[in-house]
Image (cartoon, rainbow, N blue to C red):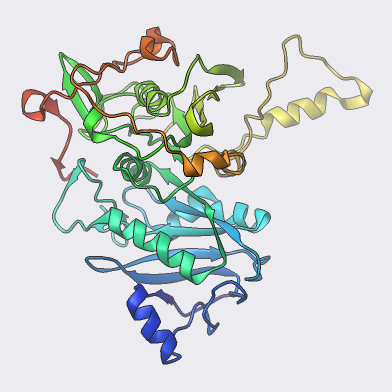
Length: 395
């Protein structure tokens, strides 16, 4: 059923006043939607009051939602020059949510995009553009308010970011915020703002100090020219995907090398010996561009043909444990569901930046040093280095 009206998530104080006078509605005329109250299914616009402005977004309620059972929620962050509805169309998170019975929230960035009706994120330490608002406060406000409005399992709040949205999500976690139990990144994983030290671009150690070990899953395309796999590109990017993964393996306290498998043009690496039950999974598409990866049915068609007339061809190599033809949203959801519960209450001291800190592969043995694209971190003052932070107009 289509809905023409918008719901409003007000601030906590205003919410109390609205409930008192009976003026608060969620969706199309439903009552206050705490546990025990249903919410009409489908996609709805909403607005909330953040610290500096009224902000907006879209949320999706699956048809299975009854209001009497706690459900997870996934936040879906759009890329630059996009918007919440466009992101849901790209990612299909709402379709996964309908199948699996969870809620999706897609927030809207505060910066105007390059095209009418599009937006971008005011990423801390990265973006410098007039009109940018406090995105981190907005995200925290949205997490708080969605928990007030629906029957939410607060231990299962996850996030996914595409391109600029993933850069925003990266910095949200790097800034020590604890709103998400696990996070996924498509063409967007960062581990702090880029700085150039002795001719190499690296993540700035002082710019990424997560509150706890974080389970993350990340996707990258080798042929991505917007956020290049090997590094370079726009000022906010510079260091490559492998460097970002290596730094996260250190931040998560991973030990040993990742297990590696390949299926078609997709290579998966899994780090599953990290602190507090955290895990890191990466999927690299040899022929992938900056576009959101979509399932390719060609392999299944070939497999079906090989079984025609009862003839089955047995591959000479070991069958990989993962299917390369799964959309990232569904793959992320499976990963989120397996996030170790201990990850939510971890008390491990975050990795702090120290003078002379090194992100070299030998520090933990968590990646192949020969493949790293410059991993030595530094706490040297930014004035003494060339920095990719604050590039005016960069989205």
